[in-house]
Amino acid sequence: DDTHRERDALLVDVMPFVSDYARRRQFEVTMVEMRWGVRDGAVNDKRDEICMMELERALTESQGVAFIFLQTQKYGARPLPTSLSRATLEALRTVAGARAHAGIDALYLLDENAGRASGR
Image (tube, rainbow, N blue to C red; front, side):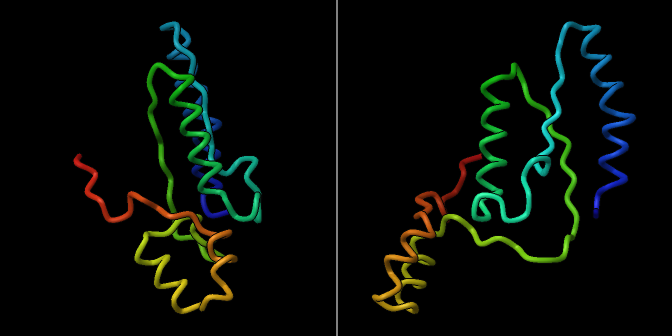
């Protein structure tokens, strides 16, 4: 596992300290590790959606949210996106031909926000 030592350090050293610190101040800390319970091939490779649902749940259940983010260069299969920009979706439909449109439409959602400035 590419982040095994880092995750162990968070679980064994950091999380107990942070939990104790918060408990003494009448707060609860909950750790959500995005890969726990999300197995390879899960739900037709919709891991990103599962992770986003976890983040949304954390936002609705919390008074505030803080993140520790570990990212590595992991080799192997990369899941296809679940949504595409209008331009990409139209290009894919054009290249694939009319017979493939139903399959493409079943696999991909139109990302209405692709390419828009976030305003932040």
